[in-house]
Image (cartoon, rainbow, N blue to C red; front, side, top):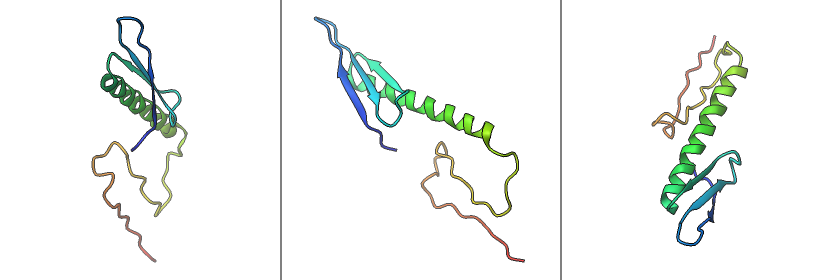
Length: 91
């Protein structure tokens, strides 16, 4: 997944520091002494936001699955980009 990161230089006098915000996930932000550490911190924040949203979605989803409903791929699965197959049977 690609996200848009806005990096802000927060350096003051002799101290360096960066802050990053994310356009797609406004609730995620990162900070660090280098740009690389700032972006890594932002990636972790985005992962946390996605995990939270996934848990919230599970709470509000119906407990039963409709017959022959397609599987929704799980982005945390390493095989997510592989084609998903579902079986349907005709009566």
